[in-house]
Length: 173
Image 1 (tube, rainbow, N blue to C red):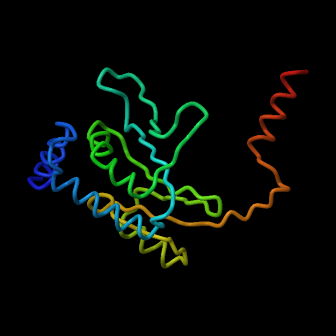
Image 2: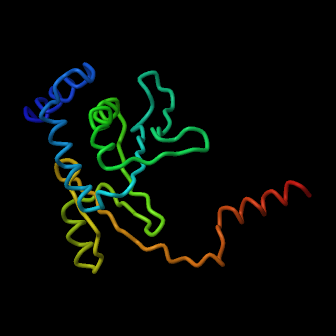
Image 3: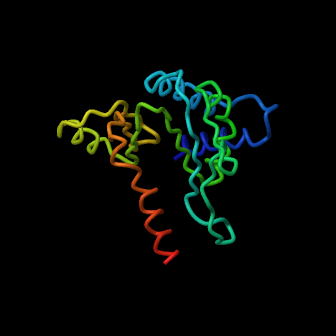
């Protein structure tokens, strides 16, 4: 428990702004990101999503925040840009957000399975599943990333667009 409080105290030091020296915790997160980016592909683009873990202190619902999303436009970040955002993402995490960094490509879909115990990771592998990467996100808690080729033929169409079209046709009737 003392180590966890010490790590939290280090993280809180980053709340002072960009002029504060990087804490050991932020430096450790940057090193972890460098390893993850190397596995996922350093030259890839990434979406960042911040998901609140519950309501705000006044009990109001909080909503996900995607830093690159502006209306209908979304920008994706390079691995270096993500690394530069780690102090800000650490602050968001301290404010009660889970942070997800998703590789975005036209060729692959990346699926993440979160909150896995070491036993679940071992069983997954014993069952023949081969994740692209597995990493520990906190003590005893892992994420597995699967990289799947986009192989759905275009002639099947986009099920969401088809559903929206059917719903729109029903409204016009």
